[in-house]
Image (cartoon, rainbow, N blue to C red; front, side, top):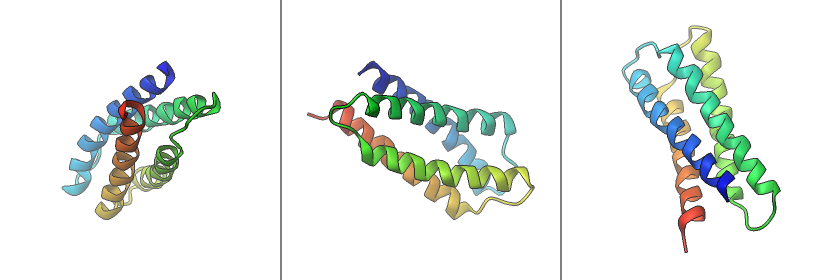
Length: 114
């Protein structure tokens, strides 16, 4: 169970940085690359820890994992656009965040729900 809670912590940190990055995208400003290169790896570690937890067996938060992977695919596409100097579509950034937040809420319900 510790793996699950550590994954939650990584996702929470990634979410905080993601909200900060979203403010830049919505204002049409360049994203701070140090934050970009911290946000993604934090979320990736969360996904890896969630996979490790799921592989241990028992009831599993598959819905959260699927949403996080979909969000990661959108994040990878946004990173590519950002690094090639193309603007990030605000709708894509908001959709990425909504997928991740939904996965996070479902993971919290799984971990702490009765």
